[in-house]
Structure formats: C-alpha cells, structure tokens
Picture 1: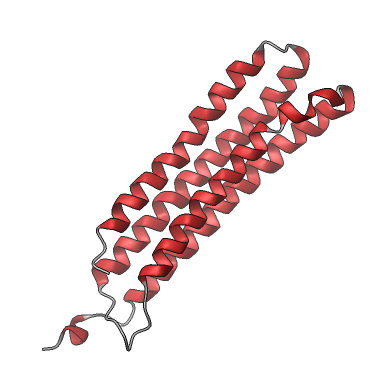
Picture 2: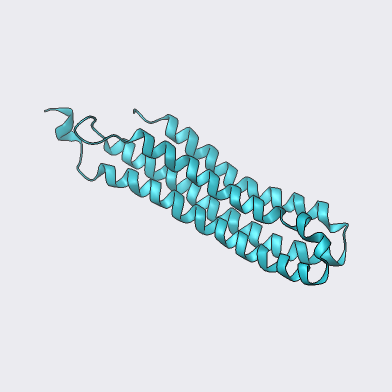
Length: 162
C-alpha cells in the first residue's frame, strides 16, 4: 500500500483547525486585554491625562499576544503543502492542531489576565504612583503565560516531518 493510501483525507483539516484556533483564541485574548485595560485607561485620562502614556503598557502587552498567535499560524501554514505535491499525515495534522491550541488557549488566558490587571492597575496608578512597578511585574507574569504557549507550540512544530 502506498503512503498516500494510509493518509486520511481529513488530516489537513486538523492542521487548518490549528491555524484557526491559534488566531481565534489568541486574538480574542488580545482583544479582551486591550478592551478591558482600555476602559481603565479612559477612566484615568479623564482625571490625569499626563498618565496616559505610561498606562498604555497593558495594551501593548495584549497586542504581543496576538503576534504570538500570528507567528505560530504562519509557521503551521508554511508546513502545509497542497495535496498533489505532498502527503499530509494524521500525525502532522494532530501536531499542528496541538500547536494552535497551545498558543491560542494560553493567549486567551494571558489576555484575560492582562485585561483584568491592566484595568485595575491603571486605576490604582491614578491614586498612587508607587503601584506602577508592581502593576508592570504582574502584567509580565500574565504575559509570560502566552509566551509559554508560544514556546510549546514552537517545540511541537519542530517535531513536524515536513
């Protein structure tokens, strides 16, 4: 039996689902983090407009989550070739699905954490400027959740046979 006969027809669907899950969940997390912390920034801006630039850190960190998802999606899509030129195995499909889910779901969690900390943090920063360093540290710990998902996805992607 040829190798193409052993490859299921739905295997590329799993790889494309990995691309979709990475982008969907990662961007939902980034959007939530941006929106939630943006509400706090808007509240701060009404009282002290001079604090706006330092308060934008959570929005920037949320945007990085979407970049993690984009990088993994591009890598997965780059490993996929049209069916006539290359056989796409079930192993590769499951591997790419796992890549997308790892970066997507950790991006969702990181965006949620950044949004909550960003909103509360910039409001607290309005009241007390010494809270800024603590807020940034907590934001970094939230961001690193998405970075862990990116690292796992990259390691999984290197296991691909393509």
